[in-house]
Image (cartoon, rainbow, N blue to C red; front, side, top):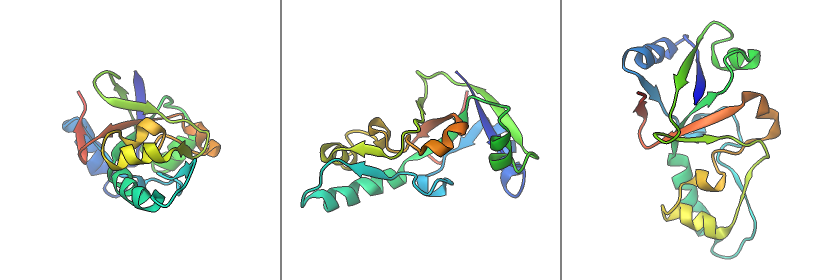
Length: 160
């Protein structure tokens, strides 16, 4: 699958871009570093007295998840403006094997709607949040990004 990653060359961006080129490594972030204020939030189908305890544990797991964002387009002006330093950055092209990496397409239907059982599975480490739509669901206004996310366990990841 051919995907693109926009990068600013301002500030640490140049060093990160060189790391991407020379060492074939990309940086993964957590949801608190994303520009969507609703990132990592969810809707719950039912609440009971156990909800708060389960939700607190699940939130810790969600906030620790690492991922990076890609798009299918190398020519979207808004992406160049927002993620490539106001048209002065760079777009990297990657050919990624979906069988080798945990790549998920983002859906634009709003917050993920989960059950208490699903939150418990996240809290217990049985399933990652993205299995239930958390961290891969965004509001419709972000649809122009045509986003894909690559999930990993460390702050950086080698891309072969």
